[in-house]
Amino acid sequence: MHDIEPYYKWRDRYIASEDSNSPFHGRQYDEFVFRKKVYNYFIHPQWDEFGSSTLYMKILCVDYDERFAVMELIGEWNDTLNNDVMFLKRKVVDDLSRFDIDKYVLICENVLNFHGSDNCYYEEWFEDIKESNGWMAFLNLNQHVEEEMVNTQIHHYASIGGELNDVNWRRFKPAQLIQNVEGIMNNSTKQLLY
Image (tube, rainbow, N blue to C red):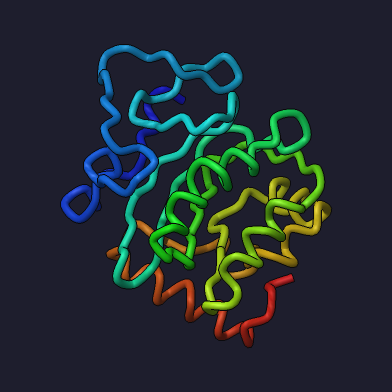
């Protein structure tokens, strides 16, 4: 797992540690010392901690004019024991929401497991963005992760599944990715994909 780096080909457009509005502004990274772990396996030092002990992230892009954020996640998303969604909502999303970000793409192909609890924070997040026609979409979920999210009723608040699990997002520029995701959701008649 230590060789799975956050996606870096958009760094010419955005670097979270250099964005004064980012919750990760000013972070410094040691490329040679591996300290963070998932399942006792070290992960690449470029991943950002946000309060969870099992889930890490990287904000790949924020566009304040177009009001979107793209985030990549790695690890175990555990709402049962760690309430990871609370940390994500309070320490990342709430900070971005202050700048009217209302479209969120969460790239989840490296989320190895999901353990659901209640869906209150997802509901709150949905309520925060729905008036501005905002949305959140989870891309490339592993099947067992998606099934657990559905069992936890998260699909009532976020778009998951279907074509969103087959997005080759690396071939897009950030704005193109947002258009592509919106197109997928519009083709689903703006209904949730489940």
